[in-house]
Length: 76
Image 1 (cartoon, rainbow, N blue to C red):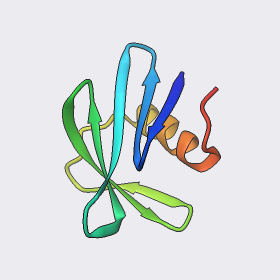
Image 2: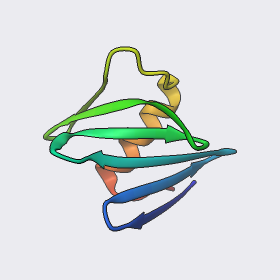
Image 3: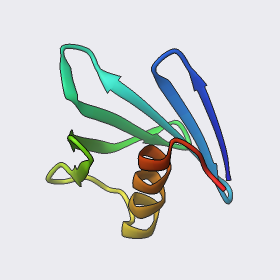
Image 4: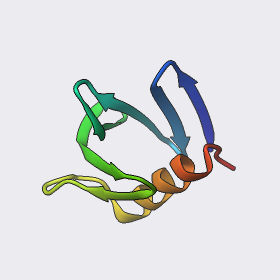
């Protein structure tokens, strides 16, 4: 798994999936998640707690890996 950060945009590679995490302009608690260039939903950030918005199409295992990467600021 690789992690690249350009400004505030974060790109993670988990297996064959390319995941892009971008903050939503005007809302510091909301992150837009795209997997393989397709929008999958929003991640809500409150301090160190993360949750998915209702209707997000993100697999729970991918969600767990994303949260781990965001909390530790590195991917192994």
